[in-house]
Length: 225
Ligand code: ADE
Figure: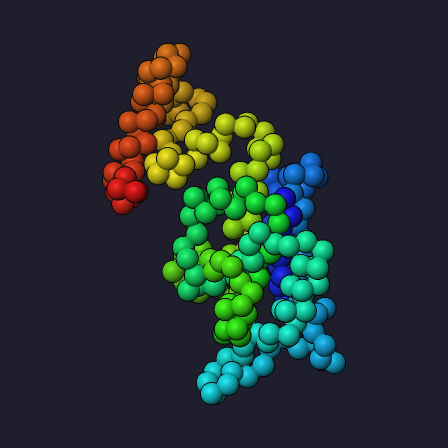
């Protein structure tokens, strides 16, 4: 899979993509992450990427030209399956979207800044608008890192224990059950007996019941989906 991130702040993404699971996924060749600095696609001598909003008002708007130059340069080599725009007024990101995106070959993620991009980019070039929650970040970069992380860990071969992504919260619309590790008794705080029983069927049943109970209490809406 190839993920192309288009941003005015590529440095902000260096760290998230260069540690732990995301780093290993790239080293194994399971995903290639390409960071593109939007300023490199500006024809302006000051390398500007934003301008005042028509009609006035506070805040700058990201101009069409650098974004279109960048998308066209990249698309001339390979067509994207999705051009995703990170924006607080987009569709709420979810595990099911992460699952769907993880099956794609090539995606571009455009990070918004200032007041956002010229609306014509959204109308004519973007295929999916994604929000990571009902709050406003300073830019789309951290949101792009969140979305990329959720996608990349689902690519087969990325996680060491192949089955572990399947038992994550939100797969099957259930939150994950509680987990415990050694010691079995820490200062009188004990691990549930069932987990020490060695009875796999009993443990699986307990985990399922705990997952349902936890979901009922914390996220009842998930059970209706
Ligand atoms: N850019 C700014 N805030 C955002 C959010 N909540 N989700 C996605 N992109 C954003």
